[in-house]
Structures are given as structure tokens and as C-alpha cells.
Image (cartoon, rainbow, N blue to C red; front, side, top):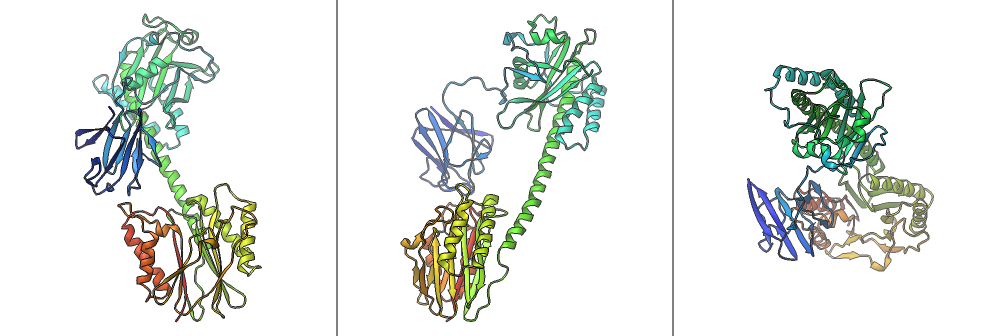
Length: 559
């Protein structure tokens, strides 16, 4: 039977997955009840279907993670997967008979460094070369401690300050050739983070112009990775335990060493292999011990360089996002119109550095005000790019077209001409005539604006007046709705980041709560109401990060 094993405080507690659905959370009704304020009341569930099991998040505040990655939707579980719910870690055990767990790194049947056409190993059991000596980490300093220390210092000095990963690996091999004068060839393989395979990343040959091919055995590599130990052959060509393959005989390897590169988590991130073709210069066990120490330092240098490279790349991205944020903010109006008898308010807060929400307010001829409001499908950089196109399109259109219906038609046709599949804009365009206090509105797939009356009641526009989003259908006949804006009435426009704002317990703000809040604050003017609504959404979220962009626009006629 499949089980979840909770790993906490050095204890392991098993839960049998004996029901079709097992809910994990703080609520007493959950099949697996968890005591942590970082766990939602109904946080996640494990679903069984035959011999397969899946985990899915139930809209939790802090998300659910499988093997360190946050899941979206239902995710299939494999034996020994790690599931994190808040701060609590589980191990999934399928209950099926499992093959002995390997190192987590898969390897091909053979590795060809350079352009080798050698055949595969003829016998997997015949590729272990000579004696095996395993030393983890840096290794002990009991064998030639002064030589080992000198070698570690030498490679540390040669690699100090190197953050370019493409330069680091060849530098590691160059330094190894200085430490091991007998070495003729060397290569480094690193774990591919995407598929877990060991991939050749660097090769060095002491004598230029010779065959630059090394073939490594699957058996050797697996043993090095699984046991986290080094393998030594004093004479690979004559080793009685080795049935000489084509790769060995053709390349005349007389002695070789293969060791793991153990990272910060003491797990293999790669291997180093060096060999010699000189029959009188064979590697010894103390050489293997020395190489294990040097490989440990090389692994740490590589991980440090990788972390530094990631940090520098993130800094670069952050700088670029700061620029993008500034550009996007520049597309939004810096001020609202100052019109006698009217008040305006607008607020925009993106969930990421840049977002897909959009608004604009501009003056039109004949004392009219244009109010443009939209929400791009998607957020982040893709949403921001569509938002920029939409902003430019609206401004260019309303420069010449001042009637709301023809303007939306032109905007839609333009966006359809260069539409990106799956990217559309829900949109509302309002033209407010401040002389006769009438507004004309087109709603293209957006939620209905709310109109607060002085008596506290709320008007919303009929659903049949809502058309398709911008960029979906060229030539769509949008309906124009006209209405007088009475004294004291306030129009509220908002994106779905408002009603879908979520608190740490996974509860949405909802349209009903929004309507009640607006009614309860009917004594406020347009600007005060917009600010108060934003503050109430923040109170509801209670510190939980935004899931979506939040944009609010309010405008109203003074009583």
C-alpha cells in the first residue's frame, strides 16, 4: 500500500493512502491534519487512481512543492518523491517493489568525448579497472598530507576569482595536469539539471595533434556516482578484472583514475577522469586519494562560480526589470484630470515587476474625458508587452476618433491584425461628456463597472452588453451603452486582481464583499472610495503576495 511518510524533527510518521482522496491541512476534517500556521486549512490532496497517485494544491497560501518545485495543477507522484506542505516534508512511497535507488544521475551506455565512434562496452561487468578506493569529500589528510594540502591550495589559487564557467572547467584540467605530471588525458562530465544525465563539458590532451578521444564505461561512472568513491586502475591494459574493450586497447590506456565531484550537498555534480598511456608511469592509490581531495575543491569552486554567475545574471535581470518597470510606469498617466464638478482616482499595483493591467485618462475635444481600462490575459513580461501595444493603440486611435463605438472597433481591428495566440485584452472604454453629464461605454469582455448611487444601491451594466475581448474577433459589433451620471454617483472599474485577491487561508475577496464594502462607504467621494477599496483588499490579503495585478479606477460627479 502506498504511504506518505512525514519527515519532521528527526521522526518519520507514516500515513497509509487508503482512501481515494486524502486531504492535507489544518482543518480537523482533513485526513492528514497538520499543525502549522504556514499550512492552509485545506492545503493539498493526494488522489489515488489504480496504481497511480497524484498530488494537487487546493489554492493554499504558501503553495505545494514536489522535489523542490512548486506544482501547478495535478502532478503525478513517483516513488521517493519529496512533497513539501508549508514547512512540513513528506516522502511518497508507492508500495511497489522498487529497483535499488541509484545516485539520481542517469548515464548513457557510453560517453564519447570528442568524436569517438567506439562501440559500447561488451560486458558491463568487465569494465571495473583494478582496485577501488573510496574517499569522500576532501578525503582525509592521512596519506601524504603535505602533498594533499599543497595540491588543494594550488587548485584553490588557480581557480580563485574565476566566475566564467566556460573558463573554469578547462582551468581545472590544466591545474590537474600540473599536479599529476603523468596524466595524458583528462575530462570532466557534469550533471545536466534538466535530465540528470552526465554530459561531457571539458577535455584536455597533453600532446597536441593526437587522437582526442576518451570513452568512459557506464559501469565505472555508475559505480563512482553511486558509491561516491574513486576508481583506480594501476594498469588498465593488463588488469585481470578487465576484459579489454576497443576503447582501451585502441587508446593504449595503461592507468586511469575516475572520481566524483561532490557538491555542497555531498551529492555528485560531476566526475573527473584522467588517464596515462605511459606504461612506466602508473597511478598509485595515494594519487587517487590526492585526486579525490582536489576534485572536492574543484567541485566547490565550480558551485561557487555557478552561484556567483546566477547571482550576476539575476542582478542583470533585476536591472533590466527595473528599466522595464520604469518604462511601463511611463505609459500610465502621471496625473488625473482636474474637471470642475468631477473627481477621479486611479491605482495600479502589479503582481510582478511589470504587469498586464492598463489604464489611461485623457482629455478629448468638447469637454469630454476618455477613460481607458483593461486587463491583458497573462502577467509579467508577456502581459506588459501586450499592455504597451494596447496603450499605444488606444492613444493613437483616440487622437482622431472621439466616439466610443468607432474607437473600440478600430482598436480591436488593429490588435487583431498583430494578435498573439492566447493573448487578449478585456477592456472598457468610457467617454464622459462633462457638459451634459452623460457617459458612453463599451465593454469588451471585462467585468461590469459598478455605479454607486447616493442611496447606497449599486447599478451594473447588463451582461448582454458585454462583447468579446479585444484581439479575439476582428469586426465584432460592440454595443455602446449610454447613461446619465447623476449627482453623487461614482463609477468603479477594477481588474480581477481585486475580487480574486486571496488571504493566507486561501479565501478570495469576492465580488459580493466588494459590493458590500462599496455600499458601506457611500459617504466617501470618488478618490476616498478608491483608496479605501484598495486598503480593504490589502487588509483581506493580510500579507499574502499578490497572485495578479490589482488596478482600480473611480470617478464620480460631485453632489
